Image 1 (cartoon, one colour):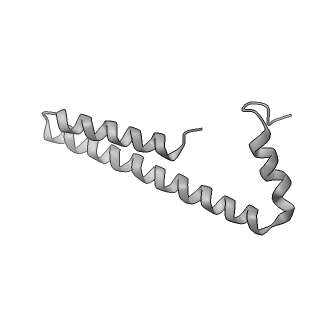
Image 2 (image 1 turned 90 degrees about the horizontal axis):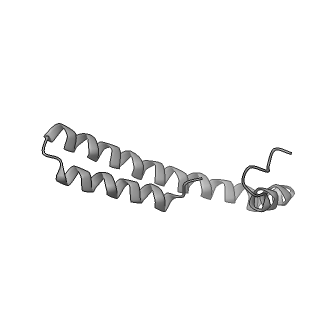
Length: 78
């Protein structure tokens, strides 16, 4: 899964491409895509914080939190 920092890196890459684009419409498109990457990074952080708050408030969910962090990728469907 992609983390918020990786999404921000993609936004920076789009901004860099926007700077080198000669066509104003292409420049605008790259800036729009960069804004979308940044928005996804913010949403990712907000969702992560919300999930942590729910897990922290309800001790019954502790086993699920541990399980989701301990299961290697691709092995969670047993």
